[in-house]
Length: 99
Image (tube, rainbow, N blue to C red):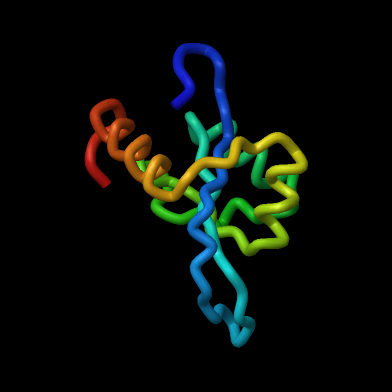
């Protein structure tokens, strides 16, 4: 997706329904070109660093509810399709190594 020094945060459109801690919501993924940007953005929209999924791997991301997804978009995250984000993450594997 992004190349070179131009870093970007992405949020997909998966919006899968799931119940977490007894609360049913729709969930998507927040990813970025690098960990530093992902964590800075996530904290900036109210996520806690310990909520990261697959830390340190090409699949590093935060699961986000629809409300957080909307907040991420308002703060500049780039909306992408779930399949496109998956393809991008697999391309990162060549750089970062397997999960």
